[in-house]
Amino acid sequence: MADPRNPGTSSIPQAAPAHTDSTSPAVDMDPVEYTLRKRLPRKLPKRRNDVYVNMKTDFRAQLARCQKLLEGGGHREICVHGLGLAINRAINIALQLQATSQGALQLAANTSTVELVDDLEPEDPDEAGEPMTRTRNNSAIHIKVFYPDPQ
Amino acid sequence: MDITKAGGSETSSSDIIPSSTSSFGLSTEPTGQMKSSNAACSTAMEPQAASLSPCVPSSSVSSKLGQSNLRRISRTEDSSVYPIPGLADDILHMRVKEGSKIRNLLRFVTARMHGEGRDGNGTSLRQVVFTGSGRGVTKTITCVEILKRKVGGLHQVSKIYYKTVNEVWEDPQQGAAGTSTQRTIPAICMLLSKDPLDPQEPGYQPPQSLGVPAEDTERCRALLRPAQSPSSEDRAKRLCQDDWSMWSP
Image (cartoon, rainbow over all chains, first blue to last red; front, side):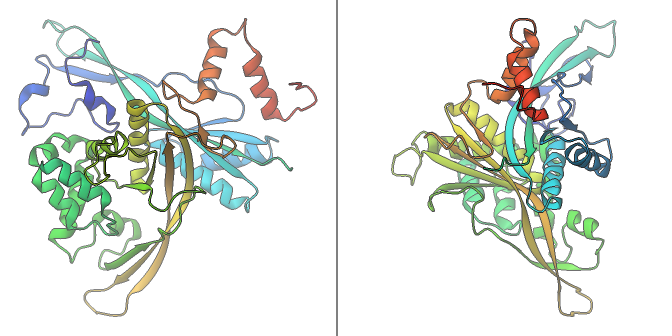
């Protein structure tokens, strides 16, 4: 890994690596200025009944989409995925679906870790800074929302 | 050490309101606070501001409710039962708050899981339960994911639920009787166990060396080799479409 910094800090998902704290000593600083570019998360497989929740789309639109899949789309189960900050929203959507179904729907939540890649590009191309990449981890949740099979 | 003391007091105390315990823990380790200021600067400031000026309610709540002239005088949560059935009463319960430091929580819990606890009379724990609500949900999941990677071989059951919080507000100018509000906030409860758990329980995850759910790895494998092994992907699709006639085990 071409990462000169402490890799332990990468486990904190909200930590912005480009943040410069004036009070802390410069042990964390790169000698060359870099621009941090976050790549998009690894493209995950997507079935018809997979919903990837983000923080840009309106909450009600995403909730309505899930309800449409379950009621109009004829799916017995859907999978709601959320990464990082969107975990809260994914949980909210799943709980709202369950509440509006009057107990007909069940939830099964799984958690995982997703590896994300950041690109570090030198701001000044004349200086001897090489483009670097850095990997960090972020938490994710996968909630299966389903009608339980009658037994 | 100051740090371990701060971690223990923060995690073991059942603080309903962000009390002086957490701000004391922060003030005893100023270097740690500075280092982690980029991670949770807003959350670290909140309990301090609340303890310094008790007349002003914490900013997040007041902005959400739009009652800036009201003062919250009590906040009670229903912390009676765990949503996971069959838990022991004396199980180690980690309450993750949005201002909790991940390193404090993990230092405490890994020591207990490895049997180095100060008051745990040397025996290592078999089970631990993590709960978090609101903006602490993400941190709770991160803690569990790191712990699973550190300890290994842990069975997991996750439950999500709504937690109801009763709040009593009063107007400091008029001194009138408080109005009580009831709010529901999303919460998560996760059980980690060294012993096997019921795989039929919704939200169960078997131990994994990589920490990726089985469904994901299966799907990744199916993506990598679509020509050779399309069976798992196909089976998943058929299961989802509920087409039982085509599916033969």
